[in-house]
Length: 346
Image (cartoon, rainbow, N blue to C red):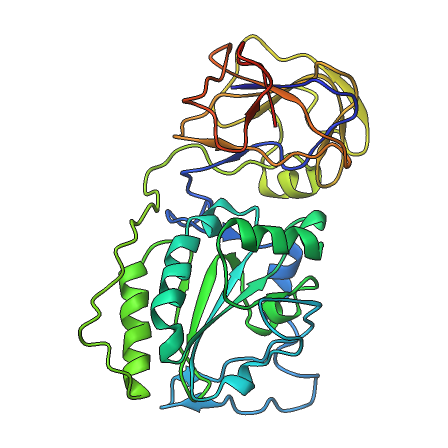
């Protein structure tokens, strides 16, 4: 696949996000590891100050921890400001950590929206905690647009500073925590999949508050979790790529905050980003400095997603697969064809 930039100084944030992936190198399941600096700090400082004895954990039945409260929230969607888990006592609550560019999260939305539709009138609440991976994901308008795009009608809160993320000692997108009517975490699941198991747990907790779900069965939303080793999620910005050992394939590599004239080699390896043309390497994106700059990726996947921006202006890209323009059968719904010659922009 080749993506050619047709306009000057386009910023390619993340460059290529490949769907149908195994997003974590460690786990062969659809999940995405959180920021390294946040993740490394989750267990730090949890035991209290030096010389101060830590309080005994609040456990139900000796094993289920009390759910942390929502903290540090800066925005509210589909709910009133000030939403608290403690205000939902007597209800079953599912807290879902997500971010809107995460393909692993996106594939869970049909299940979440279906559960909310089925059980919301029985005392079931979903709270989507949006903890952004990239700066543009902090914008309220962008998150709101994503909720509308994916049909999310349950409450969503913006955890821009990862305060709630850290309170839950979370490390992954997506990550679901199921909380009972007394406010204790009874079940959690990292990543995609396990939808039948999760829904059964929801039903069990609803039965505990005397809701009759005996005749409801389980949702029939298809499970599209990938379980094959194919092209993983790739990052362009050096702040994301290099700590994960994911440099580009060009011999020059990513040169921090510098403009480099790249020439794609004749031989390319799969699952590796290659650049052609003049690019500036920024901490969270690659910026095309001249027109005609290209990104090349040899991938194994059913579909490919790219996160790109043109600094507020319309973005025009040429997309090739096997050196041919993508056609209408190959293109996603967000690709707008400029004319019948299959030159496309999006």
